[in-house]
Amino acid sequence: MSVMRFLAGCAVGAALGAVAGVLLAPKSGEETREMLGEMASDLAKKTDATVKDIQKKADDIVSDAQEKSEEIISKLQDMLGKKEEGAEA
Image 1: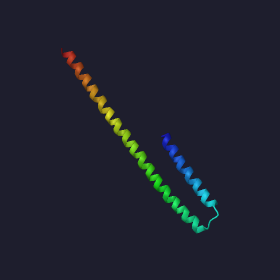
Image 2: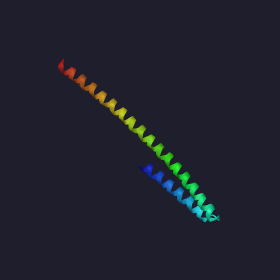
Image 3: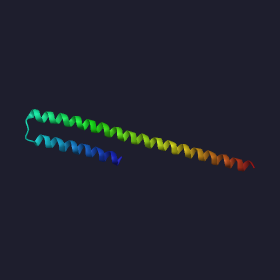
Image 4: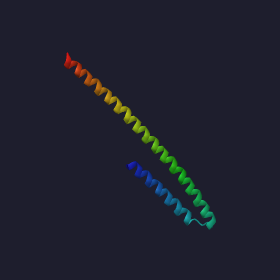
């Protein structure tokens, strides 16, 4: 969770810094609005890419966890089967 908070903080900080820089720049209103629109579009693209990356990593982690749990279950079943065979002998 701390990684998510860090990424969210970075995104918010970058957005606020960019907006402050644009608003304080000596440009006309039309130029400023155009620049803000471009920045919003860029931010949306970057956010989308970051979300997709995080989602892929989460999917990989879930997949790895499923594989590990299946291995553990298989080993436990093998151990139980051997224990039952030893008890029958």
